[in-house]
Length: 280
Image 1 (cartoon, one colour):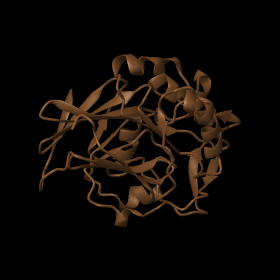
Image 2 (image 1 turned 45 degrees about the vertical axis):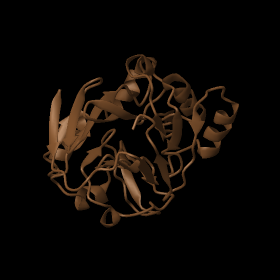
Image 3 (image 1 turned 30 degrees about the horizontal axis):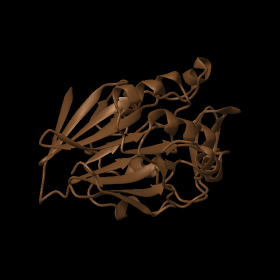
Image 4 (image 1 turned 180 degrees about the horizontal axis):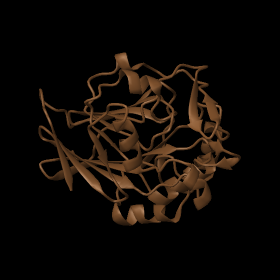
């Protein structure tokens, strides 16, 4: 397992943590003295991103903040290299020395932009991050943009990620991020390998690409929750771009009809979900 050592300053708080929803798949996760930025996309409302193969998407919702507003970042966790997950603003304004965990494809493309501290992970591979008393283990989870291989060949490889936070060998909190995936069979392996997920961040939106749906609809997102069984689930990636056809209301309707014991939490841009690890 690869490892990464970060410099610690001050006393880390293990009593509570938070997920700040910036927009699309961009969140700020803070716990145990670690600050993690996911899928950084900061273009303004009305601006466009290029998704490849002649397809552009317009940003429909203003992100809750900009890069200059962020606290110091320890690590970026990136599901894949697409313009709505790592945009031109991120490429220009983020510190090129920030470590980035993602697919080999994304690490390679970001390296060409000057980001040289990439950590590529294949499915089930892990990176162990140490900072002070905290250890964060980031493990790549199975994810695919489409069930049809011909469509996958046209799109970037994608990872989900599992974030395991621990202190002195004691696991405290487990957070699962689906990444941009469809309901592929390998999602069934996640709860068998990694039970007791505390929080799931669920990418929905029903993104269309060449008339094919390449991210989960709201109904499919709820099904992913039923499969992976987090104690709490938060849908993200649901209304930010013009290529999304399945909004938050679809997810809420499916969640209301589900028999899962998972608690659903809904965040608007700029809102924070605060958690208190039971094991802490």
